[in-house]
Structures are given as structure tokens and as C-alpha cells.
Image 1 (cartoon, rainbow, N blue to C red):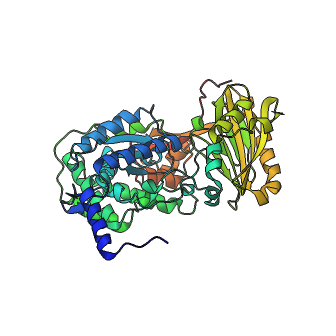
Image 2 (tube, rainbow, N blue to C red; image 1 turned 45 degrees about the vertical axis):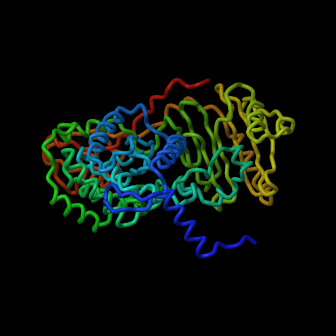
Length: 496
């Protein structure tokens, strides 16, 4: 048994930590605080987590909105009380309304959140709030609060327990995303502080600080609207839009006077025009989930998963989880080429094994060359792995289950793997996605009438919430509203 430090030694240890870490005034509060993580360490952590966000959540680099978001963010950052980090602004490919900050100045806004904004002032309030968290070092203070990656994708946490180091090398990281940095809640005082700092920055940059309160009210309405539906973690969880918070931000805005500076978008209509064409819901470019099937129009393949299994899609892989969390199927690209055994060789290299290829057999699935094997991992988990060569890629379909349950689940894994096939012409033609489109109202027209005329795929109440209106409002001539319209997906050239 290791000896416990005496009281004197403990004091010396703590003192050494304090001397090493140092004390510094918080950029926002001005109060001296113990900085256990240096700015350089914070930047390194942020950089590492930012790579995971891009890999596992996906960023929209090619969106025309990205340069605008950066321009708005940098204008706010000029007013930040903290200048020792470089602020970066990204649009995350996430349908849930969300905005978050990572240590070191990485600020993210989701496309789902943009769908709820109605003015540049509102967006400035949200981005300013996130800058406020970085400025006050709140994101650093959250690092110690770790949470399971499973929560991010909604897959039951039992799957994460199946991922041993060996399994992780085979299927990739399912449990390696420090999602606490994104979704763990801030304290009430931290939220209040970030609200104030964000509003003050917005006012100094020329935007209306009261717009944050307006947007929080919209968020609150969206929470109410979606409360009966299952959803992934979002801005609502880490930034609760309570009536008290809405009231506090509205009150604080009265104390601030915006500087006289022209906005980037001269009018509300000009701001909304930037949202025209934004995808809401699933992006077909990532592949879409229809009931329990997965269809990818760009890579031209189809997969069928078991009923009642929860299917989630990320940029790197598709994960399907059994209802009880006791098993999973993970699908991704293992290698490039036309030889399915290259998938087995890639796993052999990743796991530093020498017998995977020798235990792999050739099979044919849907007329495609494939290979199959089974691997036991760490004496408690077994994998059923199929590699399929198609379109210049080797797809890996790995079924994972505890050894005791593996035999019963093996037919399920076999069924999923053997459902892999090219899309039919009609399947590809029928893939659609919802995009924001702008519609001008007619004098006295109701939201219901406008939505029907424009063939909105949003329900009436969602149209009202997304536009900051009440569903019974009468509209004025020329008033611009956002709606969602289901449109055929224009597929990129399919890789064959």
C-alpha cells in the first residue's frame, strides 16, 4: 500500500502546483484566479478537440455562409476582453440547434441554429456569448467534467463499454470524443457572465444587445415545440433558455448603447438571403437514414439495419445500436482499392496482429467481391467483420457483441452485411432533402396560407417559431418568411 502524504507534504505539493501554475487576473471578472492550465496548454487542448469535432461531427467548409460567419465573429472578437487567443469560427454540420466553444478560441455554430435566427443582431448575440465563455476561461474550467461519447449520438451507453483498445483499433473511436467540452452545462453564474460579456461585445461592435434575449425566447419556444420528440444534445442543454435568463438579458440590454456602426447585412431581408438554400434535417451528401435503411446517393449504396435498432450517421462511420445496448454494427471505409482482403490487411496492421488475413475467407455479396472473418477481443467481446469492395473503396461492416450473446446475434450481423448493394435508379431519384427557402407574404395572408401556398415541409407552428412569429399572426405585404421545402437531391458524380 502506498504511503499517504502527510499534512506538511500535502501543503508543499499544493504550493508547488500553485507556483507552477501561477495566478492571473481573469480577463472578464478581473479577479485573480488559480490557473492550473496555461494558455499554451489551453490552445493545445482546443486544437486537439477541434480536430475531433471536424472528424466526428463535420464542418461545412464550402458553405457560402462560412466567410460571413468569420467576418461577424472577428468583428466581435475585436471587442473581447481576452486577447491572448486567436478566435476561429466554424459552421458545424449538425441539424440540432447548437453553438459551443472549445478552449483556445474555437467557436462553433450549427446549421440547425442558423435556421432559427432572424437577424444579424441575434447571431451576433449567440456568437458573442460563446466568445464570452472563452474570454472568461469557462471552457477550460469544464475540462475535468468528462462524459460518454455515446450521449452525443444518442446511442445507448452500453455500446461504449464494448469498445476495448483492440476493438477501438478495428472499428475506430466510438468513445474517444470529449463531448463534455461541448455539451456539459455551464453553471448559472457562468451563463450569466457569458451573456453579459457577449451583449457588451455586440453593443461595442454595433449590434443590438437586446437581440440575444429575443433569440433565447425563440429557443425556449423551440424547446416546447420539440419536447415530445427524442433529440440529441443541443444548445438547449448547455445553454438553457429559461424565462429568467430571457428577462435578465433583456434588462441588461437596456443598460447598453450600441455604437453607430453599419451591420454587415444592411437589412433583415439581406441577412435571411444568406440562409436561403441551407439544409435543415439530414444532408443527403452525408447519406440519409430512412426508417432502418441507410442510403448514400454519392457513394451509391444501400444498407438495411434491424428494426428497433437506433441508427446514427457521422462523417466517419454509421453506428447502429441494439435496443438494449448490448450489441452494435459499425460501418465505415477501411481502405481504398478493389481487393476486400485489403480491409483485413488494414485491420491486421492496426491491431499489430499476424493471423487475421489467414483466417479471412472470400465471399460474394450482391455480386460484389467481399471477405469475412470473426475475431475475439480481450476474452469478452467478439466481432463479425465483412469487407466489401465497391466503387474503389473497401467498406468494413463490423458487428460487435459480448461473447455470451454473439451466437444469437450473428444472424443479425450477417443480415446487415448481406443487405449491402448499389442503389436502384428509383431509390437514388427519390432521395430528397429539406432546404430553407424564402417566401414573400401577401397582404393579410396567414402563416397557414403561406405555408400551404409555398408547400412548406415544416408544420405551421414550426414556421411560426423559426420566424419569431405567432401562428395566428396576419402577415404584411412583402414580409419575408423562412420555410423548409423538400427538394430532390442533386447528387455528385457517383464513385463507381
